[in-house]
Image 1 (cartoon, rainbow, N blue to C red):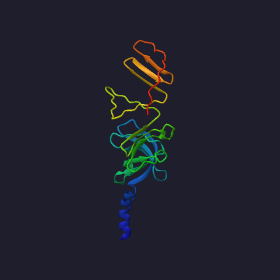
Image 2: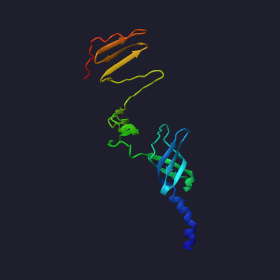
Image 3: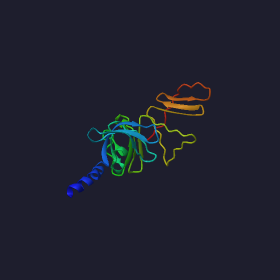
Length: 190
């Protein structure tokens, strides 16, 4: 009787055990509406074309070797989906409880590559270069606005502009050759 019951329950037990699995990313395709990945699972088991679900409006393309969790609908290994993915090699550490961050594998470089939402209400953005573009208006507003350049500050509006650097100020206008530097030190910023 017990042997018969075990024989009948074994397929269900296997499906339950196979519903959730750790996965290691081998390859990723980011060209469709949802990413498709190839992952390594248990003892050499490889699954290809597995859908990787992400939160709405957030996306990333993890590097091979990233780790994830694969859920298999009804315990069917042919119908798995990746529900989470992380990379212990790249994750930034040392945040305070309640803080959040976005980062990439480039964060280990000297210039860093991250956005941190701090507990004090500030947002810290670190990158080698930052570009802000708007098709209409870019507005910076605050009780106090400070712009600081270590070696050069340049601006132009419709063909007219100035460049401030260690040599002084260079000015130009439409169809004008840049006027040579004239000595004028930029104001001190506290």
